Amino acid sequence: MAAEYRFSFGPWNIHEGADPFGPTVRPSIEFGKKLKRYKELGFDGVQFHDDDAVPDMENLSPEQIVKQAAEVKSMLDGEGLVAEFVAPRLWEDPRGIDGGFTANDSACRAWAVERFKRCCDIGNALGTPLRVLWLAREGTYIRESKNAITAYQYLFDAINDALEYDPKAEIAIEPKPNEPMDHAYVPTIGHALALAQKAVDPARVGGLIETAHALLAGLDPSDEMAFALSMGKLWSVHLNDQNGLKFDQDKTFGAANLRGAYNQVRVLELGGYPESGRFVGLDVKAMRSQKADVAHKHLSNSRTVFLRLVEKVRTFPKDVEQQCIADRDYEALEMAVLEHLMGG
Ligand code: XUL
Ligand code: MN
Image: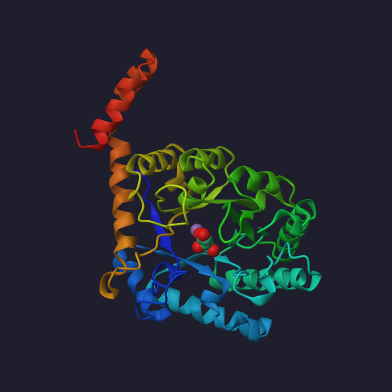
């Protein structure tokens, strides 16, 4: 029996539809109601930012934070859900305006490291060792505003501080080359895994690869995943899609490039991802024009596309593939893939 995939998403993937050019268009759904949706939509894992779990954390003591996170854990247990990861949301606080870990202001850097430690506490209270670092504002709008060499050193130090503080923590870096910054530090999985090698405990630093982020870097997401898998470092994915080089769209998985989606599923299959027990995260966003009562379809549709593509990968005629490769007839292989995807 082939291993089953497990799916996850974050509460931010059911949202009110605000964008940089207009306000919300759908009512807010409270966290408890969102949790009820997970199983209905076919999901078992919940991804968290630290303040998704403990919204008022900046005004609470470390003990109060852990207590509130423990209450969220009970809610998860009640719904038969598990927490997949917790990510420190540094980018909404005024002290994170210039990036937290790489801020020029030492007080802001100290705040960011403390916040990461609280994020670790929340992760432990929720029962997950996985921390995700999306390095939102860790970068620059103009290059002269930071010393990038020093900034990378600050980043190494922050990661090492968290690893030392929390012996259970496993940190998956989610690379993204730009947005909100003009240039973000750690733009690709290659950068992330090089950084991992420099950590005090390299075995506890890996990666999360998001389709749209790899595409924004001009790279093939399936090859980025292959690189991480080859190093045993693909600890989560954020599958979605992206229609060319524009703002981070977080479209339904496969919606812009079905062949590209097929290749991502193929590489997860080749890499034994389901056997690893890791989650398939879907970081997808409902279109702003979607009505409130159907603003969850991007999630169930992405999961359906994924599972349909698993079937496509598993049923692709391997003998044809082998023959085409032996003949070096890549036109024939390409056509066989296209026929298979078109249902032929
Ligand atoms: C940003 C992004 C985030 C992270 C979680 O582009 O993808 O949602 O996945 O912080
Ligand atoms: Mn993401």
